[in-house]
Image (tube, rainbow, N blue to C red):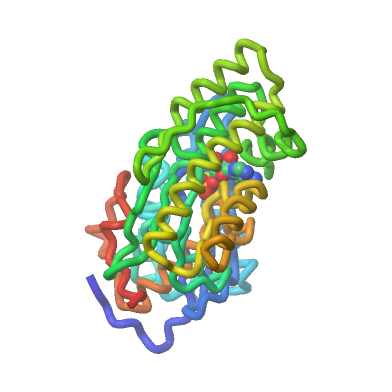
Length: 341
Ligand code: AMP
Ligand code: MG
């Protein structure tokens, strides 16, 4: 549904809550990020428990909102629209963010704008690197895909058939008994252990056409760990080398096929230096510019939702409250992106 943007509209607030992070960002319509506050849920043990994460979001929403307003030096009345992650993601987490967003928009009497979380990762990457029309490798805790814009929508060229790359690293780290510390994601802990290693342990490498599969790799790496046949550091190195080579192969093929001249790396795993160097090398081979999202915008964040909300609302797109239900499996190729020509 569309609604004319008013001439005095200036700021969009964005709420991210698809998984373990509750984030609030504030953006102008020119892509100036005025605030990017967040609180991350860290499970006591095991993976993300959706209801526990949702409870964390509900308990921390008001503090994170307050922090975002303080960072931006703005009051709630200055906001023109409330954008929120409408999907894809974990149901209880998404619903908590949507409830907060509906309450805020209704109270302030301003429009709601539902944003696709995957598109937001791409748009913040483009905004922060200046990329215009890249082939994007988007790798995070819940998603792994190679995508590019074509004929009005982002199209998926390849993706994981099972586990997401970030999740693969996280599960392996937990199997290895690593503990998650605030501000140090599991993927970063694996990266640190892998630095300087050279012992490549053979692990399953599964690329099927443009898609990849990581579950066999994960099972094999976890099995070797249990057998205590290999050093943890060597397994971290080999897991990275193997999994990153798989996504790099698919990205290169998409680049060769589309002949685009930019490659963008985005999502939480984009913070990994080794992955950055692999993607950079294929970009160079194809004479494409290598772009990587800055690390504070790599993991899930509210700023990317605010900015994508500004792009959508700038085109007059709004989401009426009665149609603001969350979409757990919302694919990015289902979304029209009229702000790109
Ligand atoms: P997101 O889902 O976008 O919030 O990203 C979270 C994912 O990024 C988790 O799976 C993390 O383990 C992963 N991650 C964060 N930093 C790194 C890093 N330096 N190397 C690899 N993975 C990382
Ligand atoms: Mg996250």
